Amino acid sequence: MRRLFPVTDETAAPGGATGTPGGGPREWTPAELAAVYAYPERAAGEPWLRANMVSTLDGAAQHDGRSQPISCAADMRIFGVLRALADVVVVGAETVRREGYRPARARAEFAAAREAAGQAPAPAIAVVTASLDLDFSLPLFTSPVVPTLVLTGAGAAPERVAAAEEAGARVVTAGEGAAVEPARAVRALADLGHTRLLTEGGPRLLGGMVAADVLDELCLTVAPMLTAGDAQRIAGGPSVTLPNRFTLTSMLEEDGFLFTRYRRT
Image 1 (cartoon, rainbow, N blue to C red):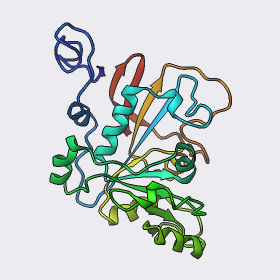
Image 2 (cartoon, rainbow, N blue to C red):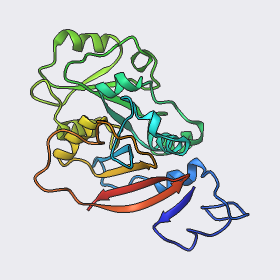
Image 3 (cartoon, one colour):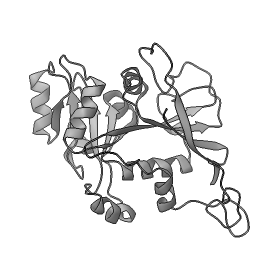
């Protein structure tokens, strides 16, 4: 892996953070990646919501309904580090079903840093759902390191809320009707002490966050692939009145994949 931006003296320095003593690329350590992707300092209780998504060159966020075919080993290493830095991972119910979500795991190399930051051993998974049409017998609900959260609206079916709670999930109301309101979801999670937020989509959930103007940061992997077809973009749903401008803060590269990080301007 090598750093393309910001340009520094070490960007192309053999043997530095971007290469081996012989000048070739090497795999970055989790600590090096964590330094690149550290959350910004915020006032106490103020949340920061980042998204982590992958897209092909022609804009597809999935292939055959899943993101794994357009990912790579380096992308999955960054995926793991971003989770290890987060308090909570916010994900849509459809993505949970399609991707076969499991609980986030505790990683030994981040244990000391998480404890020092007052974080649980692993991030909680927060599933956004209006219908609560979820399989509560899955490990995501039966055996998480920390209890899984279910974000839903006040109009959710009481029997489904009861089923989620019986399975051990914590149900959080974040909307007046059946649907979840993104701004209320962010605030509700922050009120629970989860201020380092990470969302992994899917596209409909991310699109709602963009439209509600609650997204602070986008970590986007650009895969050197073309898929054509009618796959979703990384964000769907309602459009914004004016495009939201974000600023590039870092870019890494490995094997043709670009790992970019953009922040709200």
